[in-house]
Length: 211
Image 1 (cartoon, rainbow, N blue to C red):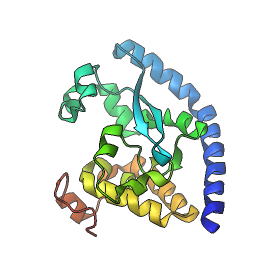
Image 2: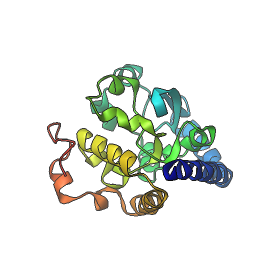
Image 3: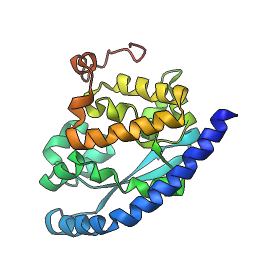
Image 4: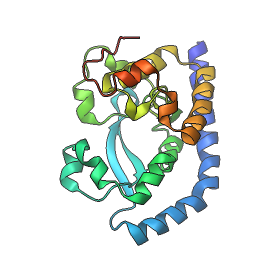
């Protein structure tokens, strides 16, 4: 019962925060769109199918940060990401502004401010037993893995953090993650990763149950 009440409060704040944030940030969005038109030929937004709560498919929005490469995008060629990243894209990623269009996803109820990161359908098909718990809650704009190293973490470790969030969810944890997210934006992700996680950076054999 208490968890259901907290989920209701969470959704109320999702609507409030996303609605107000969209109004405040919309002039910045217009500036970014103008800069992209001048410096980055191609579409403004990167759109991709993701799996949300209870395995529901939705379309996620981000500002595009890389040069268009249809083959790399369709086949998840992440090893080509760095060479495709543009100077403007690099700035948008560092400040996390590229993720802000997901405020629209939050307002629509497809995402939450805090939660596990939304996963591509291909990854969901490969989930080992137990990982499906990540889809018991709406995916988030930020979450434990995002404030614990994010891309500096191995993929299994990110999964572990997401599963822990679902198990331990409460409003106070959300507030803590939001405050920590501000620190990540200001200081960078590397400031918040533990020495152990950094040592196992991108290690595919780093067990998700390891603490």
